[in-house]
Image (cartoon, rainbow, N blue to C red; front, side):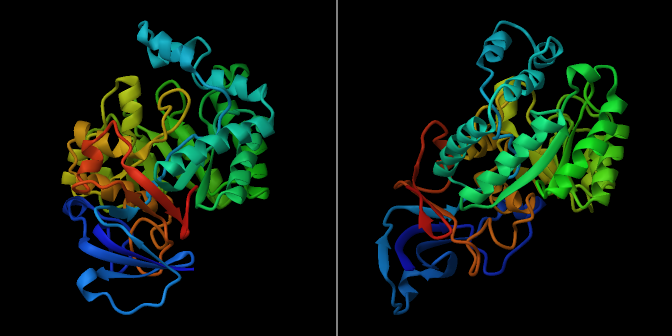
Length: 412
């Protein structure tokens, strides 16, 4: 079906030709058209332009968007959306004074989620996860990455990845799957880190690859979890089997994870709340994109990724939610964009670029998503009547999204 949207107050993130990502000063440039029209043809964007130059077009439907802004859907490149249950008791424990690490050390955190998963059927995990996915789509997410990581054993990890596979089959948006078996040490492998890495490589990884359950490999490279040697070992084994890296680094400590990611050709290095000058320098002239997760910083009351320093160094930056039950129980990309402006000193232009085209790059989707470009997927957000796109991060407590289109179809 051909649909023509007219009288758009502002059409945001228009790109005549697709770009992979934007970096440094380019991140503060957000191309737009005011008083615009947009034509979609079935699943694709066919054309756009200014209303004063609208040609005669035969369409099945015309929609007047007077006073409304249109922009591409958010591209959320780092989530743990598939899990069982929740961890609100740990939220209360942290308010009472316990740290994230103290909760983990007494059997909470990731181990808690792994235990809950073990006692939850695959069907139930799918139903819980499908509801979360529907919610984030209604909030404007039109492409998403989902990690495993709450199984820790072969049976649990494969269960999570099968659920992600079913979500791919049932939902009409790009979903990228990441195998995060090395998320934490199961109780039986406590003080046996090397043995566990070998178990992941020898027992789980081949099954993941043989069943084609993931595009990427991840590891929590962090003090108290897995070190740089573990990271190099796992990423090298995964690369031989065709899985590219997207890894957790520098959340609480800088231990060389950024360097390991770049050396192993990681698509992205994510978290980066603790960054040294040498970490920023290492990312220069690489294809690895840094990804900030400000929702996690808000929820855990930890430092925010130094986005201003990263961008001013000439680097690209992507934004994602880190949606998970323990440290970021929200998949709202609108809040993430607001936090980037409020807490990371990013401009609205930089934040929107980071959450659209750069988020798409962090999932290898730049050629199909992340901008309003002819031939790309018709995935876009229509706002309520608002004065400007800067109003989206400004109104951080309100939902200003009127409707979301995925592949040319409006979400119910």
